[in-house]
Amino acid sequence: GSEMCIRDRYKVMNHDTHYNCKLQYDTVRFCTSSDNISLIKGKENLFKHTFDIETGEVTSMEFNSQANQANRNIVPFSLYIRVNMQSKRMIIEFSSKLLLEDYPLLISEDTFPQALRNMERLGICKLDVESIIEDCHFNKLHATKDVDMELTESILNTLNLYTGNYRKYKWIHYMNEGICFKKDVKTRDCQEELNIYNKEVEILTPKNKPFLKMVSNPTEILEYYQKKTRFELKMETKRKIRNKLKIPDTSYHSVMRGNPNILLEQFDCIFTPSANNKAADVPLINNFHDYTLFCTLYLHKFNLKMVEQDIKDRRLYSQKSRCAFGRKMNKIKSMAHAWSEQSMNTNAVLEGIREKLMCSVN
Image (cartoon, rainbow, N blue to C red; front, side, top):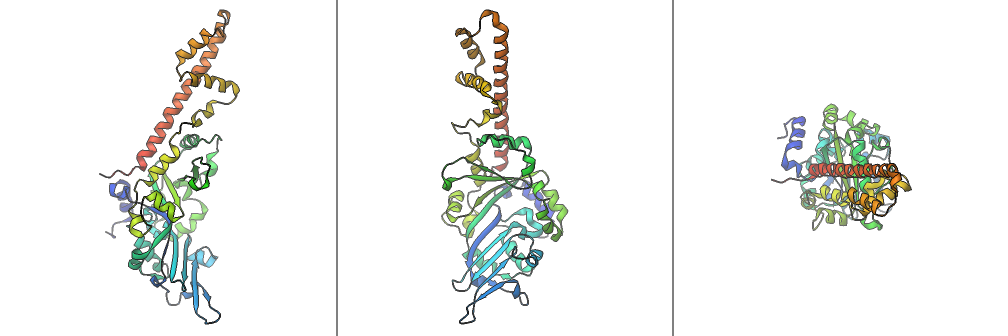
């Protein structure tokens, strides 16, 4: 129950299959009726009010945690509320940090009500949780999964190659933020992306300090993220949400019970080698000479015996230059080994990640 200590709850999360199959979100934005909010007496001025000049009536109210320092002091993470009195609609967007001590649990069917109630705990406003669950529709969701895996330079290099990106990166510069892997698609509309974070590094960045100061269990939160890698898929239109989650609408129960393998499928979409993916051969080829060796291997499907025979048949080396021939064959051989090692290693890395992202419903 709710008395369970946080550490035990995190343990359950890590090992419980049911939890493993829960859709979890790091950021959500939804639209609901403006009747579902009431301001707290004495705290009304937290909201910026807009008035109709003619009637003096309030037309809209807005709270933005990023608007000024005073707001950031109360809510040191993203929380945005906009109430439109004329259309009777309200938009709310927040990060899973709104769960405070339970931040690592992320936003799911289990924690969404608690996140909404925490707005009152922080003295922002009161929300009618039940009514919101009944009528809200989501238009932004960041599907997220934190897995037990140390995000190393070597894993990043492997993933980078697989997306056909030839540049070698100094990954250390990117460790403080999410690293965005894209599928190389020409049209903007079907740009597929997946963000991968070294969460242990990212949680320690200065921007997270005020949040960790505010919660009562910063050490537990930091411990939880040790050797954790976060996978995140950003969906910022209703259409994308419906497509990726395979749901008919973006109501509460649809998005919380949508496709549990969404991150695995996105991972496969980006990291499955396509026929034209020459990515994996890149670091082996540093000049034109390497390239010709590689093409020779490729032509003979990496069968060294066939390569050797072909060179002999073409009499490219005379009997006298046996040594030169031997040296050339050694070069070809070492390239072939590097190639097979690399593809083996790549597959092992990809399989390892797939296993962690897979939702295994028993």
